[in-house]
Length: 366
Image (cartoon, rainbow, N blue to C red; front, side, top):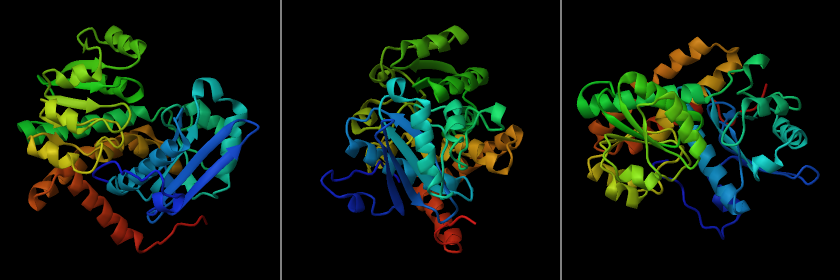
């Protein structure tokens, strides 16, 4: 998990998902639904992960993404101390034109057919209202709207958790768990990045943002007049920063980014930030402290997982605040073992999956 898994696109599904328990292809021509559900591991419990609705260029791209994302969810749940496994789903297509009630309900039927091995939630291109529609055909849905007893927008605690992880990184880098007086660059100010900016401004940081959506940037500037903006991610990476926070899609930390990045810390909400295995070592060689993505962005998972107990926002927020100590523990293990933090996070997650998972085996619903 220390880097985004790369695959030979000529390989068959069994080779691509060799470390996965199950990969399901869902097809409903009448509604245009083409979806892939991937279950990486259910050793700790049922897989929980969002449904990403995205116009992938090819089915191969969608498959590679869902395999990487579901693997990340296994590690995220394990490191967060949850009794949950790793699953993820993708729906192929543009949600602006393809999403409708029929398609979402058809998708819900496919999720229901897994009999509780996979719980879905929101992700890029899907929202709490969509989960409410899916739940009309499916019992295994989290991230529902508040009006339906759900956790609502999981980006709230995702951002809060990233902020806690950033505070932990600051305590290692500068000796104080605060971003006050530091310049933080946030790439992507949609769902999560927007909330993260608010935490940073409140903490006294100077914030610079960028996003492919001018409207998203303008919303932040309207709410926080002190925030600055640049035209592109490349411009943000090349600017004078103390912290770089990638909060859009994965693969943001490439060799080229590492070469020009002047920030002392990388800590953001995006999944699978490291473009390939080995980038974590390049960051360490340049003296850049990397807060592993699935460690710090687990707040959203914690938020929607709390629905399984009857949702309490305060309880979920308290649990998400533990991301500060978890991130500190990752950095401490990295220092003691002499490895990058990404490797240390993997070791902690794998240890829990092994030690606890061996007691449970493959999860089956009651």
